[in-house]
Structures are given as structure tokens and as C-alpha cells.
Length: 101
Image 1 (cartoon, rainbow, N blue to C red):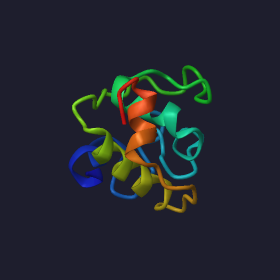
Image 2 (image 1 turned 90 degrees about the vertical axis):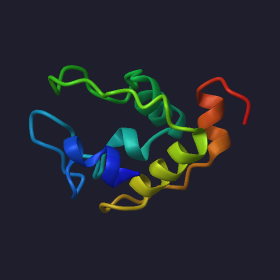
Image 3 (image 1 turned 180 degrees about the vertical axis):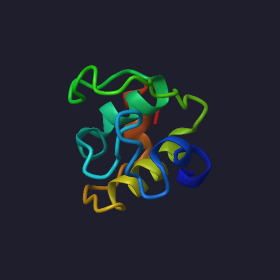
Image 4 (image 1 turned 60 degrees about the vertical axis):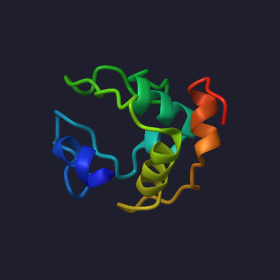
């Protein structure tokens, strides 16, 4: 999932492109509330934990992903690239999007 969708912007090592695309390593959005992460990735809804105006680009919404796929991606992001955060389950993603788990 990461290779096919995230690498063009966030790069193979998740360090992003300085001044253009943010790093996912140590990101407060990636490591923070999984519901905020789901809304950001799936709907492009900027999380309150993300500082405004740091990047000139917008997150492309990946609303086509199923909650289970998104949960697997988020778990991957939260447990790789030096990140250490709890796994995310599909029910959490579904609830964040206002769907039935």
C-alpha cells in the first residue's frame, strides 16, 4: 500500500521532500490520534495537530481505500521509519469516517 501510493510524495524512506511534502517519520499526525490520521488521509481534513502553512501542497484524499486497507497502511506507518505507535484497526477508521465498523 505504501509503495503504490505514498512513495511519490513521502519517498521510500518516508522523509518526504523538504519544503514540499512532509516527513512521516516522527510525524505528530502519524503518531497521534488515529481518527485524525484517517480523516487527513481519507478525506483531506487537516488535523489540528498539524501546523498550518508549512507545506505548499495538499494531501490527496485517498477516500477510495477501505477501512481495513487504511488501517493496515496506518499501522505500517506507525511501526516503521523509526515510528513507534499502536496499531490501528479497521473499526477505528470506519468510526472516524462515520461508517459502521
